[in-house]
Length: 203
Image 1 (cartoon, helix red, strand yellow):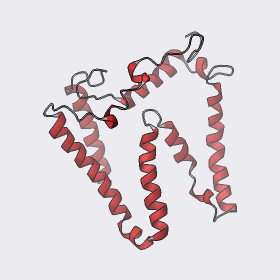
Image 2 (cartoon, one colour; image 1 turned 135 degrees about the horizontal axis):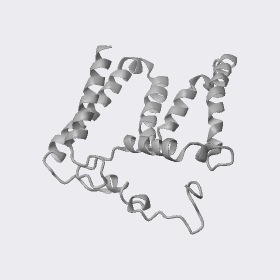
Image 3 (cartoon, helix red, strand yellow; image 1 turned 90 degrees about the vertical axis):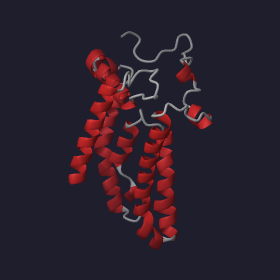
Image 4 (cartoon, helix red, strand yellow; image 1 turned 120 degrees about the horizontal axis):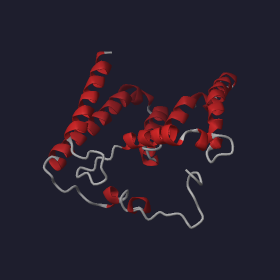
């Protein structure tokens, strides 16, 4: 409880400091490459729900009307999974979680398949492959390893910030760091063929 409360205070404090102290923090040409992906997603959502209006996007006959079926799917699928796990208790159905499936899909964007594949592969290796072969090791070290990976990510982020960004050092440039900027989307050249459209015909 104390850790959760303290984390909430620290996150809000850091966010307020960053928004008030870093010039152009969400601008396209921000020198430290802050991009505010979550903020952009919620801004776009506010435009859809507040400016355009959901009726022009999701009403019957509109472009995204099919998405409304997910209300029904979200209500029915957890019940089906629960019943399936009760009927076949040893089947793999018991590993499914409808809230996790829908929440995970709902985080794209700003998350990408790379975000899911990286932890998905690590999770499969340790929670399936190693667990089924070396259960004693898994029971003793799995969650210690998880905490170690989290700490390693945090420490590497701090080191990168202090050694590279704070000193205005040019960040290492190789295909792994350039791949997101070498796409047609990033260059603004991913245009539709004449006659194609994205979104309603009229706004």
